Image (cartoon, rainbow, N blue to C red; front, top):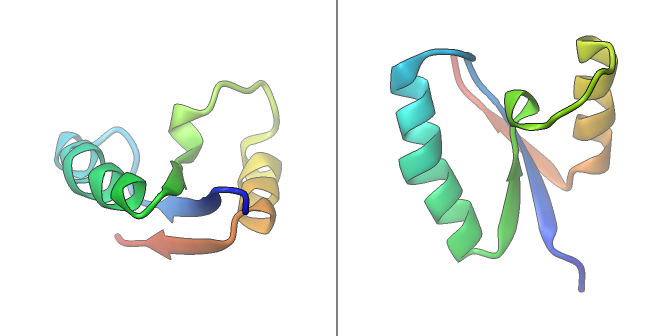
Length: 66
């Protein structure tokens, strides 16, 4: 079975959110053998909206917060 992928939608460029993502979300998902996908952590030159939609469609599930 391939590794599950989770798209993580959250505020970008905020230290508090980056800390939560790095220390809690990534740690928890990796423990569960789920790959976290966060749009600002992917190198690309695509239109950001199209890339977000593409990543959401290719992931197994999504989580998000504001």
